[in-house]
Amino acid sequence: MEVIEAIKSRQSVRAFKPEPVPTQALKDILKVAIWAPSGVNAQPWEFFIVKGEVLDRLKACCVEQFRQGIGPEPDLPLPDKEKGDMGLQGIYRKRQVTLGVQICKILGIAKGDKQAMMNYMEQMYRFFETPAVIIIVVDEMFKLTWPMVDVGTLAQSIALTALEFDLGTCIMRAIVDYPARVKEVVGIPESKKIILGMTIGRPDWDHPINQFRSDREDLENLLTVVE
Image (cartoon, rainbow, N blue to C red; front, side, top):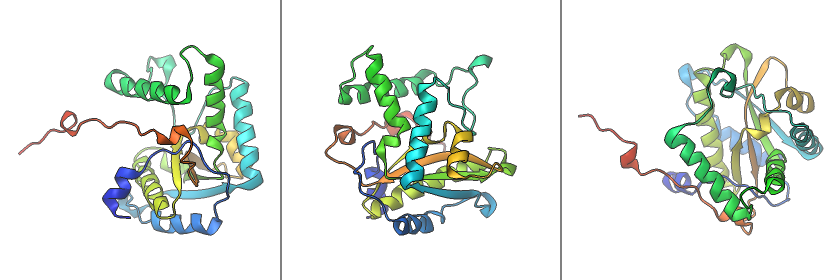
């Protein structure tokens, strides 16, 4: 697949077929993705591939936390609402709301249907029933600053490389919302900070949610040319 085609065809996959993904295929993807650029070639990333019974336990653990009303506390900090930072605002908030409305419409979740919304959220904490996840961590020495840019370029590289293997991905915060439990279940050392998780598997293209593609802003609204 050509690079431009891959970039434009990549999408967040939210429904997967149950068939397992060979570990060797995941290793092959990561062998390519680690050629992503990083500041001073620090290559701050490390990986945990989670499958099978351990993944089942991780899904159950995250769903349990969610059902108990425990809020997310990922290692990569969320906006601090107590200090007046309510997260996205303006056009950024508008885009977020638009995405939520579009997904609810596709899934038939009516406005105000709290139970249906809870069911969808639980599916998120089951990672859309993916057969495998890749968890990306960095050493605690990195302080969650500039290396986060490096992890972002790496995640894109994984997502694009996966297309060559006919696999789909979704970059998900929900996978790492409860880092203490994730570390316990997966066996991640306390000295590592969990940055993000990625689902990876065979997309279920018959599911309505995978027919959906989110919009992109017109370039002219984002671009300033200085000559």
